[in-house]
Amino acid sequence: MLRRHFLKAFGGGLAATTALPLLARVNPAPRKGGSVRKLLVIFQRGGSDSLNTLVPVGDSTQYDYYRERRPNLHIPQGDLLSFNNTSFFGYHPSLAPIADLISGGKASFVHAVGYPNMTTSHFAGQAFLETGDPRNRRGSGWINRYLHASSGPGNFRGLMVDHNTSQMMSGPYTIPVSRNFGGLNMPIPGGMSGTDQTRYRQMVRDLAEDADYKGHDLLERTTDGLLGMFDAFQDRNVNNYQPANGATYSESGLGKSLKHAAQMLKENPSTLNVEAVMVNQANYDHHGGQVNGSAIQGWHAGLLRDLANGIKAFTTDLGEAQMQDTLILVVSEFGRTVAENGSLGTDHGGSSLAMVIGGTATGQVINGGGLWPGLTPHRVPWVTDYRSLYWEILERHMGASSQAISQAIPNFTPQAVGAVG
Image (cartoon, rainbow, N blue to C red; front, side, top):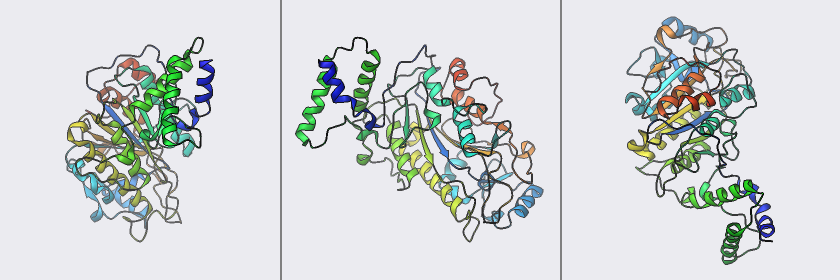
């Protein structure tokens, strides 16, 4: 009887929460080290222009070729910002908000990131980066598999800040998804007053506690996890959040996502021990109108500026101490064509650019000089397999065991990258 009432009270509203609790994991591998390391992934959806983000100015032949193939889109050398540890690349001035992180050795860049037989399909390219397997478009995500194969102190070790779960976070380890985790609560039938809502929620909790779950172990774990999630996140309403250290987030979609990501990764006002959060930045598919009047203004420049402002706010908000244990990974499914098209844009190209920012970043700018693959008429060829970068992050930053990494990045032998120390 109690179970029937409980199912009726709870059954119709589970989907409305947009989040589910963590389920049991099978034989998780132990972590190496004692501290909880954290990872924030930002996915630049659409294929960001890696060649205009980091421009090969140190090779005059390459820069001249880039300028010839992009008569309207190339960035003049005088407008590019300089690295203090390499003269081969200059970086887009829209990244100026994180210039202090770059000059301070807290930001690594890996140009020419890809994989064998790269695709120019958005759907396949994003899927390959998210599954961690360039032969698998429909599998689970590499972060999800890592969490499933490892252990940690938190009950909710992974979160997705969005309306829907991206493939990178989907799989056997259930990861809650929301734009405001502190706003999640038990679904309420319509027409109830505030007092009645409180009484109703307590009634359902009482029913859940007293229910006979015999033969329904999954329901019991799900119910306990869901109620536990409501309790754990009750002090994480983003509408009440005040960023620390004078950090200011923009009102863009990315700015709002990063603000909530920071709130969920912090261990105050309560301890959550969240280890991995993912957010998306959309609209990098700039086939036309990539620039506006000047090569450093327009569509792509605005997106990079929004990204840099968001990262600056996030790192300021977390503060130097927590950023020692936090790493930001920025990826995109592919870069753009070397040549501009007839619409002041670029089309789907080859390799992409990855950024790694935070306490364990080495500050290196990778694949310049003798490792630079050279520009072709269509694309920038790839040098570093993205899986090697994922492997390095899991091993050197997250402290993952070889067993857990092999589950996250299967059937792969990594090469050293040097982006993470």
